[in-house]
Length: 231
Image (cartoon, one colour):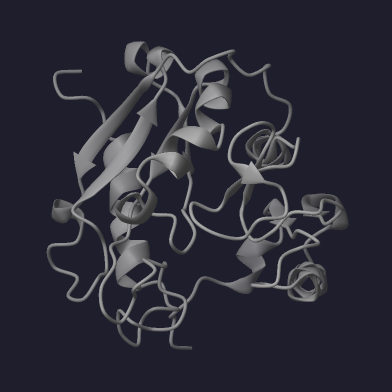
């Protein structure tokens, strides 16, 4: 064994949320439906797999009231389909949640990502990332962390804080003691849309546990989990 990925058995108790819009021509619905079948064939229980495919959405993150018209595919790739995707996926992953806050009351903390990539070579990461910290998580330890990966052409360099502040994660985070980490990629000639590395622009390890971007985000997660200084 090369030990380049975790054992497949680790997936079996995971919660898998998949979404495809009927108007998506970038990643067509048949591809996402095939992914759901793939997880089932791996042995993930059907109750752990949620496939949402009934909305006329384009290629985008879907909200209840923010963004462009539902069927649109284009920057900033946030669309209004009268559907709270952030809440639905969080409830599928974490189970029943308290009702979301009317408005976010926590803090968007911009932080330097460079310490987390300094020995990783070609990493494709931006200098700065964002974490959303609910007020209760600043006052008392023990919060969960949810990592929200932006899509292609959805990083802050391309569209500002739309994905960070308009997708609705913050309102659910406030009332359920969840810190939301928004790591950020950068744009460059061989990655002009600022995508996460799904084709190998960071090198041959991009699909392994040594993938530079995965290592960097894991380090960020460990930093969030570390005891506060002076605690």
